[in-house]
Length: 115
Length: 116
Image (cartoon, rainbow over all chains, first blue to last red; front, top):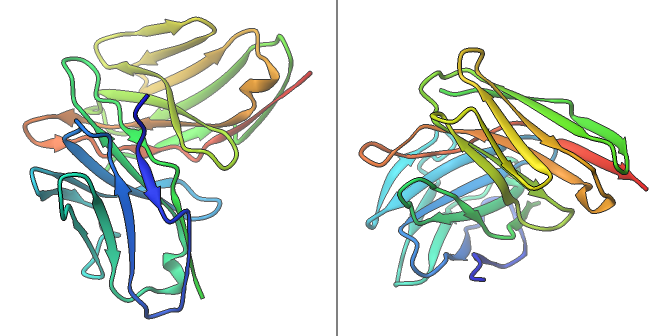
């Protein structure tokens, strides 16, 4: 069964550095998402993406964040200048909306640690 | 925006017993309610979902009920097994292909432990 994949599984970076988190959605999916989960807190929506543009973004997704689909398979989340509070598990998800189900399939996550 | 509350935060049951996890939501426009199971170190996996035009849905030992009037939905697991032990998340969203792709609003999660 196809799965969403994410790399790396764990990223450690210094505050102020740029990081790029990578995702490969399921190949025939059309809608892409990023979520994050700070330890002990809820999973929070960051952004949704369709047809090469952002569909919706949350208040968390400020100018430090950007997303890109550089080719037909990858979907990336860039954080330009990381802060301590960006430390979290980042999940990518994708979906192929059908007639009656719009399941979002999640990747295994990237644990980002900002020191 | 939507706000989803989930209870309890932890739940321990004996193998074979039933488990019930409850969620409430605030936005009456929400129309899609998935439940995800997350085992330690693994990805969240959808186990069941329900749309607002249905009151109940069942899949083997798992069922979900939705009360739109009260704005709450529940996950029921019968004949629990040790492999059911995981964190369970409820979520709610409005999915309207014309205007929104359905950002999921999650509950805080319930750690279910099933003792053999």
